[in-house]
Structures are given as C-alpha cells and as structure tokens.
Figure 1 (cartoon, rainbow, N blue to C red):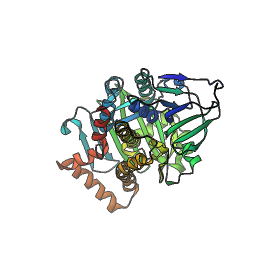
Figure 2 (cartoon, one colour):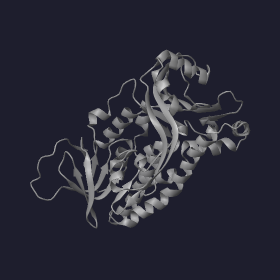
Figure 3 (cartoon, rainbow, N blue to C red):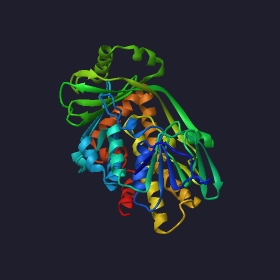
Figure 4 (cartoon, one colour):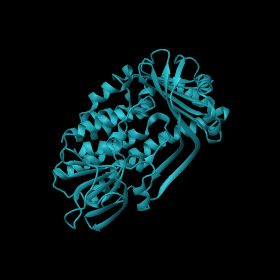
Length: 418
C-alpha cells in the first residue's frame, strides 16, 4: 500500500484517476480495501486522520465485538489468525434481567464452535488491517484528507474535491465515512431515525479475577448493560442510561460509578478494581433509505447505525463489505465495468433482507426490554428461561447474535475463492 500524505500540484490538468475511491479509512473502509486488493483495480483509501493517529493504543482504547460471521469474513481475508492472537475469545454469553428470574446462557461448545466471536481493541484491528494492506501495491492511502464534494463528471466517472489535496476521479466511490457521513449528507440521501433517548457510557474495567471469556448482557430499568472480555482480567463496558440521567452519571466519581455498576450486576463477574476513561454518545437507530446512486454507494455506519444491544452494528457493516466485494469480484471475472449501475442494484437487492432483519432484531430487543408493563416483563423472562431450556431455542437466538443469518458464509466463500 502506498501512502500519500502531501499532494503537490499535478503536472497535468487531468486529476489522477482510480478505479475505486473508498472514503473513510476506519474499520469498514480498511476492510473494504483489503477485500478488493486482490483485484486488478487501482484503489484509493481516503482517510481524514493519519495512520499513526488511528493505531495508537492505550488502556482506554475502544473495542469491537466480532461475531462469528465476521470471523468467517476475516478468515477469508487471511487476517483472522492475527485477530485471534491479539483479541479475546467469547466462549459464553450470559443474558439476564436485573431483579427477574429469566436468563439465557449461550455456550460455544454447545453449538460446535470454539468461540462465539472475538473482542479486539479498534487500534489493534486497524493495525492488523494496515499490515495486511502493506503489500497491496494497487492500494494508495491518502491521509489526512477531507473530501469537500463529489460530483459526476461523466456517466462513468465521479470527481472528488478535497479541502487539502488535489482532486481525483474514480469509476466508483464507496462512502464508508461513519454515522455522520459528510458524503451521504452532501448527496442528500434521506435517512430514517429513531431516537432512543438514551446515552451509552463506554469504558474499560479491570477485575480482581479472570473473566473466563464470558460476555454478559444485563437488562436494567436504566437500559441494557454489557460486559465483554478484553484481556485476562479486563472487560469493556457498554452501559446505557436515559438521557435525562446523563449529566448526573457523568458527574459521578469513579468509585461511585463502580458502585452503580455493582448494583446493576451483582457479584457475578467479581470485584471491579479500576475503570478507565468514560466516553459517552447518544443512541439512535439510523438507516439511510437511499444507499446508492450511479457511481456511489454507502456501507457500514454511513448506511446504518444500530443500538449497541447485541453488538450488531459493525458486524452488519462488515457483511456489507463482503457483499459488495463479492459483487465486484464477479464483475471483474466477467470483465464488466465496475461503474455499471446494475452492479449497485444487485448489491442492494442482496443486502436489503439482511439489513432489515438485523435492524428489526436489534430494535425489537430494545423495544421489548424498554417496556415495563408487568405482563410484558413476566412474558420476556419466561421467554428467556424457555430459550435456555429448549434445545432448538438457543441456536436460533445465537444465530442472530453471531450474525450467521443472511449471506455471511456465502459471501466469505466468495471473497476467498478469488
């Protein structure tokens, strides 16, 4: 991979041309570049931050939970061994509701798996992807660079204007620039939004004992709370609270915040010894109702943003990546122009069902556990207990949590066959 950090004035009046320009160098954009790297195409990976800024790790680094389907995709991209070495396996999941009798336990061994997924710090995963891209001579990373506008200049060519670089053109532009996607906003693509009136606290915790690779999802009156295994005695916390409690919770000293967590969780995970920096963000469901137009397509958080319950967001976006890669791989094999609009129509037809099912599953869980009517509370606890006891119940529930529903396995095979 070639890095371009500063751009001098081009000797020609024509801007440099790439077959594909990926706007956004985060997890989705870097994964997209890696999936396309084996193709005989020139690829620009455009990022608003430098490579060094992306991969700096520390105790407070944010993490991502990779579902089983995502591990299959990364296996096809030949980076799963590094992820397994640097990340932490989830072998069991315990789902419960505070003060209620229902619970569900999902065990990888009962499903014939060594792990349900892996948790890895985002800087570590970005470093792994960057290392894998280092040998891709057809991928050029342009950073730091900010896209100011995109415009169609010919039926098969888009031009990107920058605030800090010379322009470039591309046959296909992929928007992977995050939930607030400036590119999506500039294009005026409509979005559907649901405000959950909740904020999430994210922080890393150190325990007094090993976590034994168990992940916890706890539903409380304040909102869902998740603990994911990170290192031997470290876990990453995602704790949701109503927006009206945000200022109070932010103001709590670490000791009192840990006491609040103890009240929500009990002593199942052991004693909390340390908490890192707490960061917060508002929770909403966002889905772009338009995700492509001729020559441009959005994926990952630029196309949809989910509540963190059940950790579906990035995993759904990675399936976007795998699907678009499969469509473009097939096009190259057939010597079809990648600017052909029918390719993006095919991609959208393939992705619609999985996106809608995953969004319904995630939003449905939020709605179910935000309802406090006694009859509904009793029914959901009976349901969780039933899932734990019925042989067919847990595999069905786990299939959604692991992301195995939809096209993931087939898409992973499509990438690895290239």
